[in-house]
Image (cartoon, rainbow, N blue to C red; front, side, top):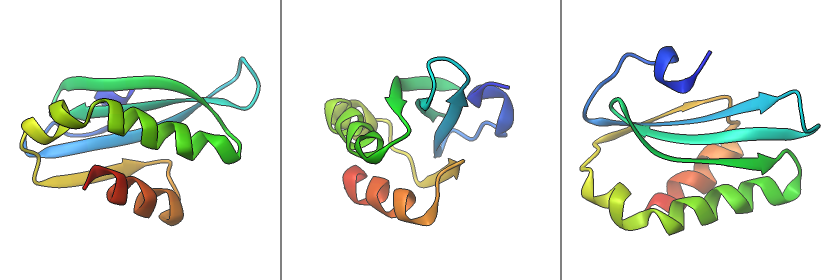
Length: 91
């Protein structure tokens, strides 16, 4: 099930998801969607470096993310620690 199918699309919301992949092992797809527009996707490792990679993806797309004018952020498959790091990276 893809990120675009799991959330009700709201133009004011930024949806951030982490979906584990069976191959390669310990990999996941990190996705950022605004409304129904995919802003960024990146395959990341499910280890200590994965969250750093996700934050670099946010930094790389910072201008576009800020320009989209989201008012809320929704997370899927991210623990509280990861959510806080990502919220900090979005500022």
